[in-house]
Every structure is written in structure tokens, then in C-alpha cells.
Image 1: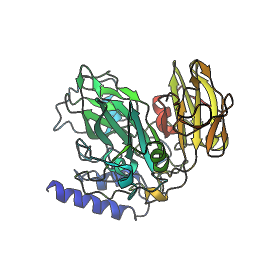
Image 2: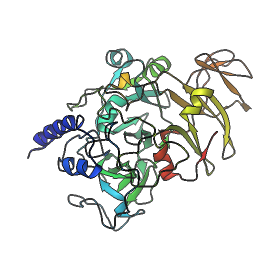
Image 3: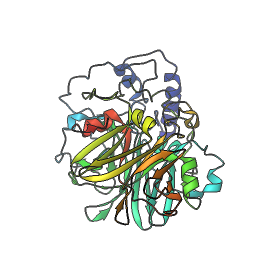
Image 4: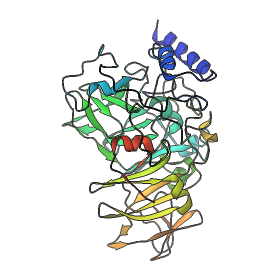
Length: 412
């Protein structure tokens, strides 16, 4: 079967599956894994995507498999080198590059993007030097990886829908520039990427090579964040936006994972033990500094709006603001429930530590009374125009963070 016919068949199966009565995980996998090359609900994130709200994956994880759950055919990867058991990696359905990364991204200005992005839609915002770019999740949900360059820095922007992990990396490592594609594999429900230079496999959630010649190599994580389109365009009127002119025919703006963003449902294709301190798919903001890992539940942030804290001996401030839709709730990203968005920053400026509180839709420092935006920029007051230093943080489902960071402290 040709790639195009397989893709068409996969999309057809996906739409039919969305209306089926609940079936067990093995039935879903058996029915959909054979559709090679199709974008079965998106990326390395599952054969046919997550179960609809009425379907439930069995509450207990299955026994750890004793044999590999994927094929090595077509790979040049050095499978003799690996830092994780190969039996923990499983096929998500699509083959190598069956979920196509964007290697030559095109960009448009804010005014043009306004024609197809709704104010509440989530975008990944990244600023390096004088350049700011937005990568809409309505595109990333279908491609999961964008290889790009900002101010001469090669970067990779990634999103795994099953884990809600949006992470930007500097793709320079091991004395070379890497570019990434999708393996079609998962580990702990998370996207496994590969670099095209050595075909080593990388765990997206932590940015580390886990299989192949580069095993143990760590990518540098950049301070990106998921915010609303309105927040980005307000802060960066001269910024650029990833274009929907990708060269692929996808239903940008629609969510193939409708109904997946429900906190108490078990994650799809996750065989590990769940950390019961929070609901599996509770959204959390996460910070790792000085050997200390802390998670800030969205349920708390929605009440407090601002958290002044110390992590690993380093003072931080966490901002939360409503007005950003969930990418994984409704069939349309713009119609998802109001999840909100966060930002994490150093509160130190000019040698002075600021203390913040919420006031209206802004954030105010007690020392000068200046008002600050979600993106950490002072919009009025004595410090107008100043920018807080962003701190690398996660914005993720709890189960996914806890799976890789079990010693995490939960802020209460």
C-alpha cells in the first residue's frame, strides 16, 4: 500500500474509532497499529490516539514486558548502547517519521496569524535575544517536532500530546548540530525522538539520548512556555508565528484527542505506576533547580495566581493567568476549557528581590508597585519596560512529570 493510501486509511480509521463504544487497549492497538505511515491521532502518541472519555484503560499497569515491543527494521541505531531497558519502549503505531517533523518551517507576521488563530488558543512562546516566535499547538499537535533556528541558535520545538509536554531544546550536542524526527515509539507514554545524524533515540520529556551512540548526551532546555495567542501577540507585536503552510494536508485547528484532558482518567499507553499524590492528568507547573524538583498544581495556581517560592536555594516566582484554552479538550483547540497559562521567573532585578501579588489581570511587585505581564515584562510603573529573567519550567500532566522525577515535592 502506498504511503498516501495508508495515510488516508489511517485518518478514516481514526474518525471511525472516535465513535466506537469503549474497547480495551489491546483491541485498539491491534486494530490500528498496522496502519503504517498514518497520522493516527498524532505523533508518537499512540495507536489511534487516546481513548475517548467513555473508554477507560485498565486501572492496573500491565506486567513489565520481557521482550522488545518494537521492530528494529529500517533503523541504523546502535541498539547495543542504551541507558534504559529496551523492553520499556513500545510502538505507538506510526513508523519512523510517520508523524512528520517540520524541517523547513515558514513563518508569518502577527497580523496574518490573527486571521486563523483565536485569542485563547495555546501557542509555545520562545524568545532568544531579539527574536520571539510562536508555535501554535494547533500545528504542533499534528507534527510534534519543529527544527528551527533563532538568532543563529539551532533549536527544536517539541510537543507530546499524551503528556502535554511542550519543550524547546538547543539542538547542538556532541560537537554537532542535530535535527530530529519522530520514531513512532513511546516510553512511559512520552514521545521518543531520534536525531537524523546518528539515529540515536531521545526521551522528549527529559531531553536525553537513551538509545544509540549518543546515549547519555543531554540537550540544553530553553525557557519556552505555553501561553495564549493573545498574550503572545500583545507582548510581541513584531514576533513571528509558525505558518500553517507546512507542505502537509492536516486539519489544523482541530484536536484529534478530543476529551483526553480529564484529570482522573488513566493515561493512554502508560504501563508504569501512577503517583497518587495528584490526579494522573492534573496540570502542573514544574521547576528543577539545585537538585530540588517542585510541582505547582494548576488547581492551586487558579486560586492563588502568584506563588513566591524558593527551589534548590534559588528564589522564584510563578505567575498564573486564565484565558488559555486546553489543547486536548474539545474537538477544536479554540473551544477547549479555560486551562490558563503560567510563567516562571527569577524575582531578582538589579540586585533586589521583588515580591509579587496578583492584581486584576496583572501581577504587581510590592517594592515599586509596577505591573507585570504573564511573560514577565513590566507594563507600567517605575520598572516599565524591564524584563524578569525566565526560568526553565515544565507545564505538563502530573503523571508524566512524576514518571521521570519521582522525588518531586508538591507545593501546597
